[in-house]
Structures are given as structure tokens and as C-alpha cells.
Length: 307
Ligand code: PH4
Ligand code: ZN
Image (cartoon, rainbow, N blue to C red; front, side, top):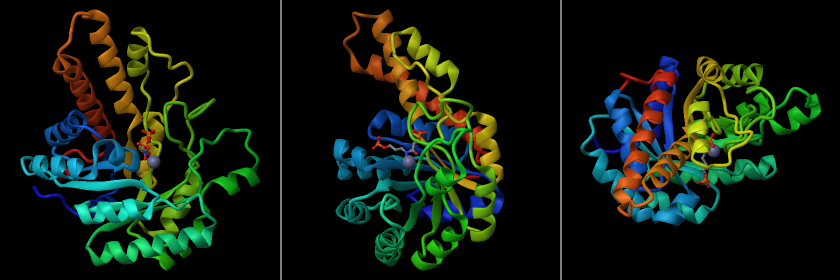
């Protein structure tokens, strides 16, 4: 299928109370793993590239890979720009054929976030492209954090209503206690579910969870077995993620789990077969490991069979 608009798959997910997996990629192996995994489960999927991914691989390369590969898969695929912060990069992604972009101006004061987001929405919508934006700061929440600090960090649900009406975004990433990377929490995995429910109820908008990787023990232990230093790694547990989906999350970002799967698979090959010099023998097992991650995430999110 040709690539589809973000809002097309996320509006369905919002109505059907499930979430679509959004997986980060910056090379061929990762993209193939995502498309193969989603296609095996007949799931819609979002392939997303950050500004760093565009700088690494080049926007033309990434778009060419996605548009040519997706044609062979019978599932809806969205090509999304993750954490667009630089207006020029966002414009480059729009011109190159992305079907969804994130404008992340969440680190600016509120009115500036509104202004920058609205500017991108006006242009993207004129090009029939969907827009995601973020409110609050991505930061893990711990039990001992004071209410004032929590309020200063996480999304304000009433402000979310104002933000959506002023900007016209298609989906919102609320900061509800998750963070990027392999070291999300010192204590237990947590999300502010009361806040998430209130945002969903007040906005009625498709919602996005960033920093959602599970950092599964099995992947961490395998990477550690072959020498990786991941002491203290902790992610969002499967139970917490499922609860987030049942409370209104419709797009779930996963990058770190793919990275750890890659790390373990490559380290295993290099340790067990020190004489290997063929990159296909090194990257092939990583591609398989990533495909398994994609499939298990899709099962968890409830999007299997929704293509
Ligand atoms: N992301 C991924 C951000 C990746 O600059 P970069 O390519 O390193 O950025 O938006 C996520 O929400 C991933 O969450 P995760 O770390 O829990 O997988
Ligand atoms: Zn993110």
C-alpha cells in the first residue's frame, strides 16, 4: 500500500480503543524488521524518524526506502517525523513526502509552543499531512516527588484543551511520567493515570505515549551476557503500558527496545564468531531480534488484525 496519513490510522485507533505501534528507524534492517513484524500480524504501523535519524541517513534515503518498501506490504504504513524541533527540518520532511510530522516545542514557554505548533499545523494541513505536538516535559515520575514539581513537569489537562483548540493539532503527546531511553525509573514503572484519563476525557483526542519502551529483562540480560553495561535499566512494564492504552493512548513510541535487541544480537555474533567479517551475518540476527520486538509490542497494543 502507499503510505497513509497519520490521522487515518490514529482516528480508528482512538475509536477502537487500541494503540498503533510507532517504531523509530534510521537504516534498512530496522525498517524491514518493522514492516515484516507488522505485516505478519496484519497491523497498521507507524515508521518514525527523528531529526537525528534524518541527519544520519538523509531524508531522501529514508523516504525512498519507505515508499518503495511499503508498496509491497498489504498494511497501512504512516511515515512520521519524530520530535521535529527545527522548522527547516520539518519543512524538508513535508516536502519529501512524510505523512505525519511532530512539532516538539514543548521546551518553550506555553504561548511560544502554541505559536510554533500552529505555524506548522497551518502548513502541514494545507499539504494534507497530520500533526502531533507535545505538552509538558518527558520525565519519569517517582513516588517522593512533590505535587508542585509534578504539576510543573507533567501536562495540565485544562491547558491541553486550550492548546488543541488554538493549534488544531491532530494528536497530542501528553507528558504523563515516561521518559526516553533505557533508564526510565529508579523505583517502579509509573504513569499518572488520573492525569491521562482527564486529558482524554476533556480533549477527546488521539493521544501519544513517548518513552514507552518496556526494556524487557530478557533483552537486557542477553546484551549484558555479551558484555553490555546496562546496570539499572528499567522501562514501562507491559501491565502499565496496557493500562495506558485502555486509558486513551493510541500511538506508542518504541525505540530503545529495538536498540537493546540490536545490541544483544550483534554482541552475541561478535562474541561467538570472532572470525565473522560479513556485515550480513552481523546485522541479519539483529533484524530478526527487532522483528520479534515489533511483534510482541503490537500484540500488547491491541493493533494486531486492525490493518
Ligand atoms: N522517541 C524516540 C526518540 C529518539 O534523537 P533520537 O533519534 O535518539 O530520538 O521519540 C521515543 O519516544 C522512544 O521512547 P523509548 O526510548 O522509550 O523507546
Ligand atoms: Zn519521544
